[in-house]
Length: 611
Ligand code: M6R
Image 1 (cartoon, rainbow, N blue to C red):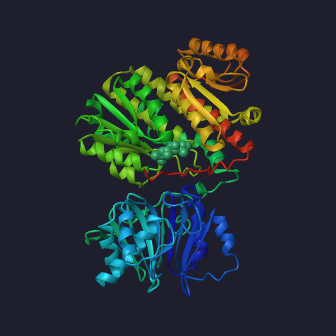
Image 2 (cartoon, rainbow, N blue to C red; image 1 turned 90 degrees about the vertical axis):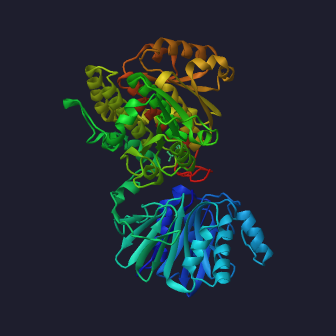
């Protein structure tokens, strides 16, 4: 939610910031803006995409070796030029970029207005910078001190960078709850919401922690806590290749990421499993495995697609490790005084590692004595740092707003966790354990076989591009796949879609079925096969159009469906890893046929760092 970029050093800041904003555009794309010290402290901003800002600035003299930039996902105030960041302070001495929400901005604003401040936007961020300047003037202190005092008074979440007209070799940044990374080059610094704008200049980064203030002045980085204690900057090496954040010949990041899944699933397993010697180790969990072994209850918390991965995991953990699992929306969990006992284990799943509700749910569970495991993709993000132990997905950067490869990597990692627990608890036999490892290792090749059918899926998509509604059905472990297929379609094509457990259809949704209704059914050969055949008959009897995901070689369902997509056979519990692939492609192609912007769907942002 909102991307921030800043630069100070010896190069031209403008091209670095614009390029960085384009890399961060997945975080928000309502408006964009930039502040530079070109003669004076100048702010340029525009409603729309970063490209609109770039076009607006064409031909202007923008030379400056320092600058800040922002791409917005609107929270306070509609998307407009005036609400775009950066925002000036009252005297235009300072400008700020801000990602997050200042919850007590209304009372601060009222107080400042009473004392003559005039605001030019509806944002909380403008209040924030007025407040800082006000403190600086009244307390007659340095900007650094004023920022520190202001931060002790604001309530909410922020990653901010401030530029000052008085010093063109100084940036002051801070974070609480929203991410901020500093790239350290030779006599230059790059600040951003994540490492993607930084990687082509340096691979040395400092992740700013919550309640830390970073002061970059005269080519030196100092980190202090909000209590004014010095913290030595901890420089880490980035493990990220530039090509991983580029489209690499694909039309969209989403398509690239769908096609990357044979590799990302393999990467999630790399060094962790080897069926030849029955080896399965998740290093990050080792120290806390005993807590997992002794627990009677695992609670999974997540949002969106990650929540769907959690639902798949519920079936797998319960089946293999015979432990009680509950799956919760993080946003519901955190607000309903959940019963958490000391022995409980929480698994928090998040691609970005920054989702505000998931983070808050973790803190709540921690305060009640639970042990928290994280399953995240973005290395160094907030959730892995807030958990006791965890396993990274190693799926590589996911930039398309619609999550695809993160889902399959999450299910892969969670399956490995369940298998490891089951083996240690003795709830599965060694032969079953071995069989599942072998099947898991074969998944990437089977995903490749499904991807090879993309032309066929594209053809089916064209048939249904004008549908108004879609129903997705699945049973057992494939019910969450139905939910995920429906979510993918909704978010990028804006077609209304619902996922249902197939057997629930007759309790209501069946009323929706007519000749206009496409019904996507995950109908693979497993122990609920006969039942799902009956569900398909029920849809047919009401003239619904059936698109069935079936096991390779299946002929019975072929005869009663309008379209079938075959997927290779695998262990029942691993089917979601395969069945979701055609559903991702179906939603992608339908969205393309409808002319939708699949990488930047309306109203969405990649990481939801606000409640
Ligand atoms: O980064 P997270 O996995 O915590 O994000 C959770 C959801 O915001 C995310 O999965 C969202 O639903 C995606 N747009 C789904 O494609």
